[in-house]
Length: 73
Image 1 (spheres, rainbow, N blue to C red):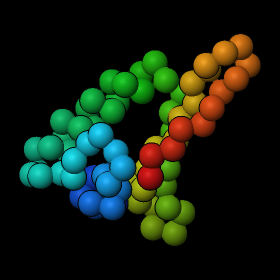
Image 2 (image 1 turned 90 degrees about the vertical axis):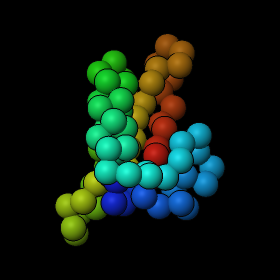
Image 3 (image 1 turned 60 degrees about the horizontal axis):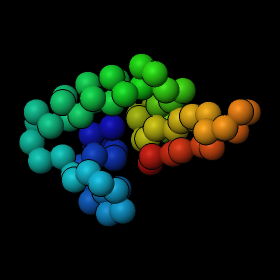
């Protein structure tokens, strides 16, 4: 995630987070992400060819039987 998403300014352009600044930042960020995902239906998205993580996708019920999809790539 750090190499393919968090280090890239184009990924953060319209987000509320900033690009990764140092080696410790991705460790903290991934632990926060894991904690958030404990109670969410979320999935890590991989590029099939390389097997590298390139984003997240998730769903959250907002009304009975309504699950908007949220993607972070």
